[in-house]
Length: 592
Image (cartoon, rainbow, N blue to C red):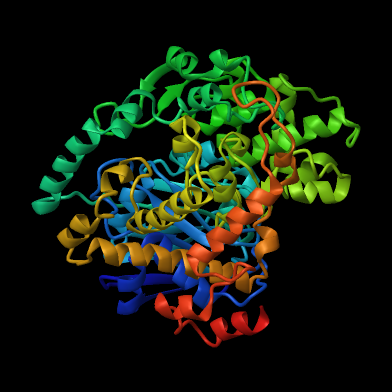
């Protein structure tokens, strides 16, 4: 199997493996990573496909700069989300990305379809992909699976993926890293695909690429983001959110946490015994011991499992995070599910003795979710919105498109409400993070300013995730969106070309979601956010529904979408999307 800029197709139903070229126009117009995955998903799926059915596809992709860029190497998984029913792109760092790029032998990734009749593993080595039996791995958690396959880089599912929990992750390095939100792990579980393993070593830059890497490492190290990242990684996010009054606390009831000191950056530094890749100019996360084994807490761990659950003891938070890592469960959705259950218990919606601050009870419920072993755990395994269909309590925890809100409460920065509402995969703080500017700006932001900031960040990240760049090192690529790097691998773009690529990708994904039935009503403001915050710097803060609607109108206008959030024919033509297959765009426009 060979071919630069080709894709490997794997059909698990008949165990066929083939290689085919990626159309040149796709590589040019979508670059790789997120963009290329979006193009394949739009091409491959009929509207209404069951995310957990054999007709859904799972794209495991690298980018044109994977293995070369500084920072944490990343790969992306693109599929239709079982949690939201939307397009899903989810990224993971660690050892897998570089070794996958080195093992693919010129291929840009693997597109998996069908469903195996027994558990299997995909082995990637020297440009070849093999389907191997994996019955002996089924039933193992992520940590155990990684240990069994210790001679390779591993991307695997754990207990949650096997049980098709709608926010199961794909874990690498035994659960230190995850392709997290939206349930890609459940899609793997539905296909009986336990793991993808990469046998070869990572790609290494040389010549021009090596010199470019050294120069950008220096640039990033001297940048504000680089200095912050080197000192604290993402775990200082809790301290920032708490100080600015946007920290979701005790089930989104408050904007600051009186126990923040116990789970913030200093507590984590005291508990840590190592930093991953400490000699790297862009170091990785803190490594800590917990009652469930070692783990690498990220910023969402103390926010959602600490402040969100009212737990002020870092050891308890680290243990809960480690349990999620081992079971391969998304920390953010898991924490929100437990927070909903606590609030539902307090309101009498569910009959369960739960309370904020109880780490042991939270751990017990997380394990019930991963195994679907109790009625409450089974209901929450499909997400908070699904659980409310059974129990009620719709107003307790905010979500967008079925995905629970993550790390920042937008009642302290209205631009973040727009970012959550218009995120292409459901409530996500990675698509755009204007809160980090608005919360500390000290001036009154206008509607136009908020819209422009959100659109620019969404487009920029669509490009960077097509390269695929580390979220934080990507800040060093802001000036030209990676054009200099792409030229070094013989892909010539002007920065203006790449800005158009970002807008094209964002609109293509919107077309996919519109084809799945999404519209303005799904870009809704969660009712919870219209209620005032209690305590902290933003005491009494809320999102005004009328002001939000005006901001959404302005956003659609800026995007070139109509009042229902459907891209107009003029926008589709202007971005070069009119050739999408077959009659898909016309059907969307006719049906709006």
